[in-house]
Amino acid sequence: MLEKLKGWIKESKNIVFFGGAGVSTESGIPDFRSSSGLYSHSPEYLLSRTYFDGHTEEFYKFYREKMIHSEALPNRAHEVLAELERAGSVRAVITQNIDGLHQKAGSINVIELHGGVRENYCMECGEYHSLEYIVKSPGVPRCRKCRGIVKPKVTLYEEPLDMKEFERAVNYIREADILIVGGTSLVVQPAASLVEYYRGDRLVLINKGDTPYNSRANMVIREPLGEVFEKLLS
Ligand code: ZN
Image (cartoon, rainbow, N blue to C red):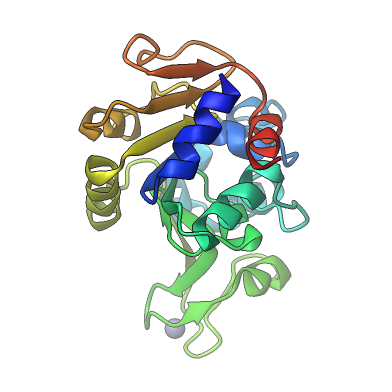
């Protein structure tokens, strides 16, 4: 099966990859939903706009501990996708993750559906602040220019999705010859519905468990993502 996929990849200049939390777990980043047992609130509440606005300091405590993984390194899936982009085969990487590992691996055209930890802006004047600035600020990060509160450009619960990014993702998927979906069970909407826009006949799912799209897929691979990508390049 992997030989067949290798053949498809060789022929295509228009591959789109769409990934979920499973892409990052192989870099040692746990799904935040499974790692918040010690907190008195649900992760959905701790990552909500209500909590950010009302309990900014506590929000940042959780966010720094559970959402920022500055030490994490890209795995083979990230690296091979970046290589395939440089080779002109992959046109876009669409991700539900906020950790910035695709960019760290060298991917250029990355669509972050839920934003990312690398971009942070002052809520008063819009000044950009780096991830390092957020990590090093004690308590609530304040703008270096105006002392306003700095907010990560991450889509919190209760906040609308960035429709401009969503539309970009739709356009790439609609035009793709090969759509590779990895590390997501495709159940969280509206991201999962992106697959609906694919019109080709080379839909590849790489996921350990079942997804609602398994029957529609042209190929289903149940191996770990890093291993699959490693073999694709060999
Ligand atoms: Zn400011």
